[in-house]
Length: 252
Image 1 (cartoon, rainbow, N blue to C red):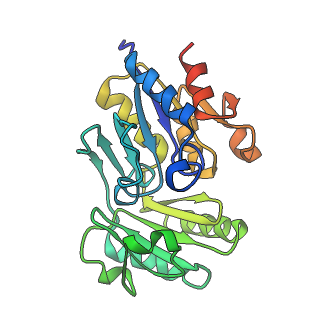
Image 2 (spheres, helix red, strand yellow):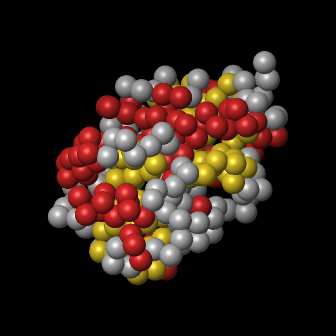
Image 3 (cartoon, rainbow, N blue to C red):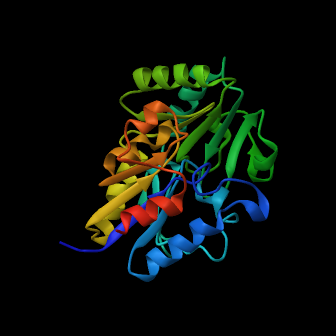
């Protein structure tokens, strides 16, 4: 068995905890670098598309892999695609129509940009190209991100999508947001892809929200924060305060 290990971290709220120069804890970045220096592989595992994170990753953070769109796309350390799945425009349109009465915003994830409509967050507006429907998106769609007024509304949307579209798509909740990806994709399948691709022996994962549960379940050692929701904490092996603390525990 390969003795190399891999550590996958959720992005927003886990590794990236703010905006601007204070987006990352220095201790976390130092711990990641030290882990990689002894042969460990480190990567992100996020519901966002690569286009939404590539310019926010600090130069000091080298990624050995990157799982995006909740496993619909997986990249190697050179940002070459090693896993790639998509939703048809017809299915994406049907899902959006089913959620339109309660969704405040809809964003279609593609390789080049987000396309969407509704109440787009200010920090995302530079990435959004306006469309009125999935049919207007001019390229392949790999995922859908929708925002709702409350976690309860998001939870109801997840249940509906996973029942009505069970044969083609999977929905994951992240507080007031819902990410929809092709059936069979999740943060857990993304980690499994990394394990197989790089011949990793043992894996670890850390996340703070409901969409991280598949990552925690797939990881050999699962971490979340003491502040995470109980439904997330129940899937973790170890509760920590920071990513650095999780890496230190995993490296023992």
